[in-house]
Image (tube, rainbow, N blue to C red; front, side):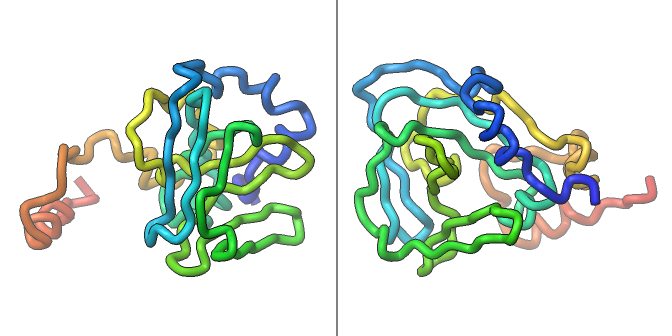
Amino acid sequence: MAGSHCSVAEFQADGLTQRLPQLRNLYDKELTMKGECLCGAVKFEIKGDVPNLYQCHCSLCRRATGSSANAATFVEQENFRWVSGQDKISSFQKPTGYRSDFCSVCGSPVPNQLRGMELLWVPAGLMEESFKAAVKVHLHMGSAASWERDSADSARLESGPDSLESLRKGLEVDLGA
């Protein structure tokens, strides 16, 4: 099945840091980013380089996140520190080796160490501080959801809708047009 796996694990064998150098972006070494899960039970800090992000659009990442793509980055282990909640982390592992760590309280995906590497995978949405990074790589665009590829004409709001009713009205679009 096309797009049924994430190739990030494949990059590990080829030397991820050499294959995707654009994921790194150097900034102030003293900068500390803080991150936490939805409920705040799992907290972490990242010191040093502020890495750029990638988005993976494969079906595995869509299912793991419940979204159109997985936005994440990689952080060197020496720059990562758990603040609290490691005892709240649970894992799910597929027979293929793909592993997802998540908060056992709220279900948010949380950072996890890549097999055999001194790198941690860090979901971008957990970082609470604004930071200077950008999505530099999109993976598996060929298997991106059709509703994502066709979203160029959709409305874009700077904040939420005025009401649930106004959102529901905005969703009433003739798809046959």
